[in-house]
Length: 367
Image 1 (cartoon, helix red, strand yellow):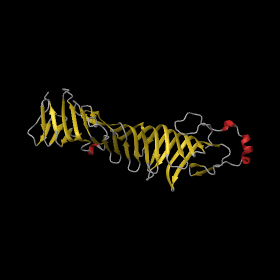
Image 2 (cartoon, rainbow, N blue to C red):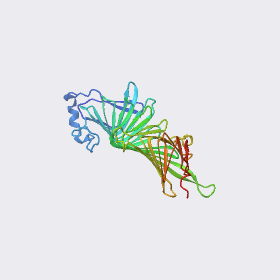
Image 3 (tube, one colour):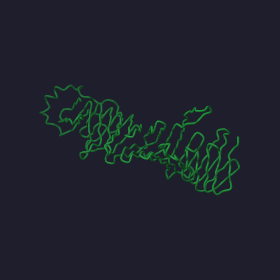
Image 4 (cartoon, rainbow, N blue to C red):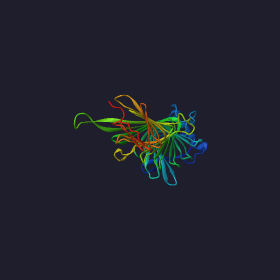
């Protein structure tokens, strides 16, 4: 590690194991007579100057940093507990501001169980008397459970074990839940609580859940894998990583006519005020998707390209049995017919509609 300083300051480097921490000690100016000889011998261009454009605001780039360090390593510790560690190709210390600015960085964020979230980015800055860390530009964050997010800004608050991205920044995420299941999202802004492993998507949310489903084709014993894609849009979403649940909702200030969560599949559209996606193990999940309050479902028959509609207070989607269960004053509409009951079962593979506590029955469209 190369360390250069602007003369007239004292410094100390300490090594802890394989980690070298730059600790600034006695940062007041040294007496002028102590540095006169050294100052004469120092070439002006021997400093590592931070002359490149910077993404991080508040960096006093109009002057040369008091200290400049190549291959910088630093550990933030609170009450003997590691909070985060950072590595940078180059780092600059601005003494009056107690500010450190790093370029081409890799940070390691520690939770209460000492699990590590890894972050890479173009720049980072932090204040020596504070514990928060800010990262800028081309950021990729790798969570301990394998989930990844991309953004252009990230603020880590170790006191709350919170990663925060404001709504002014587009954030995208990706998680390969199993070999056959993928969860993706994009959102304006994000909060990630490291302790409970919860991700809150803050605005303009789109979540796509993709999995491979097996379908038997005409020839015996031959199967082909088809993509089963569900896309959900909403104002907000809370993802419980430990439970593999994503809860979608709309802001209260949304007009009633537009305040709906939208759920789209290749042959189905649904909307409701709230929805829950269970993206856990498909073999153990009965209802992988549920919609609540003012539910509307439109299903398209691929052969005839005709539609049937259903409404209700609650809908549950059973993918294994190709079934939609409607409750709370459900109704179904097909051509000129309307049927109601206490419970309606929509069989997606056959088009059959079953209704409890009603004399109405429809076998759908005959081809």
